[in-house]
Length: 131
Image (cartoon, rainbow, N blue to C red):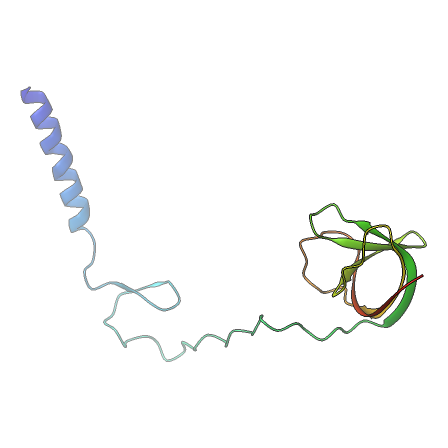
């Protein structure tokens, strides 16, 4: 029993010593790095972070306008629709035609568009007609 008490006391002493090694004046700066000085003593070379980009808006498509005709198929991911035209797959953005429909689409290619569909060239649909 006395060995358990001695082991527990030794463990507490180690924890206390490690806690005592910390520097109470050290603080974390805005950039996540430790600073030894008091608040406001950052170096003059520190610059504010760049403003955050507004990701809530849809970027303007920069690709060329195209007219393609083909068949609408389901993508591998749920809710993704593709237009297969001459062996090329286009990810339809902004239109929900029925699977199996033969359509002609006028739109703008947007290869930089983010999507969870993981297939097809993103095509922002401007006009769609059934054939």
